[in-house]
Image (cartoon, rainbow, N blue to C red; front, side):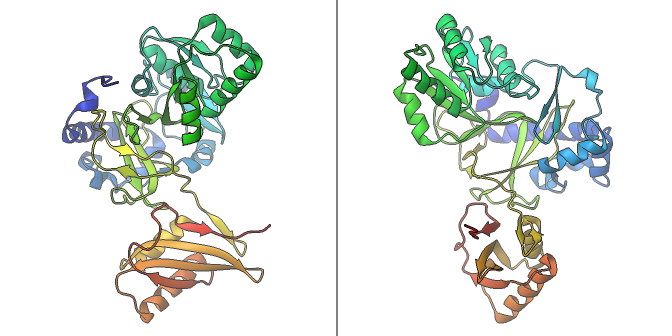
Length: 410
């Protein structure tokens, strides 16, 4: 497929960046009407937030904090100024986290990703994401309908009824987790059911390893993956180039060092932070807790937006050492106090039935005095004793891990 959803996907990256940051101050001014954002943005001149460097001055809002924040101000934690009744649908996902759906076409920005996966007007789509309370089913449903597709709202499970639907309606496309598509294919082979009408798929919600990609291809299914969340909808999606995931239009994606809001260099693994330009339910520097890294340049498919490698693990690496929590934010604080250090990695191990900590720190020119100073800072910040080892720059893995818990309690 060489065609694109619209001209936005192929515009000059500098024009896209300018358009995003021309809109952002207005979104921020509107966000100030919501009490929680008014507090978070206190003292910040939102009219000057016109580039990524200025945006990085705004503190991140962690997804992990939403449940407690929403408990203090039901239902949306004071982050939404519009009344619940002004939205189209109201959902909940595990946490619990309460999520409103804007009463607009394709509110989760899914159509673009479905189009990249080959979905077209007139296609019949078997949608196996849940329609019950959580937004997953409606994220795909609204995007596919915006493309002019007909939807079978199948939901997950009940393979016998799924086969009846497939054989009756002959859908050409599938939406759901890759795991459930595998179950359908395996069960169809065992039970002698015909699912050959499905030739395209958009999968999300679980890892999509190469082994599964190859299995689907053997069944004649051209499957693509998307990175989406129940809060934000589509963030990035795979294209025909099969080189990473292209970031969706009309959102701003940053990759930051875990435990901080500090952007990392291109190609370095970090936490995904998203800012949306939704005036009804803005997310300002929303830290998702997922790790990824950017890819250089533009996609061979012709889309020019930023590309990410896809999901690369979780950024929330908090662990307990000798009964006390140690968090990535604490490791980041050590780095702030010692700017001569580069990448940091706290190694947690167990020796002689005792927890141990070793802070590995990249440094151009180390000294005994620096080791002593960082050791003191490690104890001051974590309230635990540990060893500091300085290593050459580029020695530590670029995997986004700030805390590596290597203990085994087997």
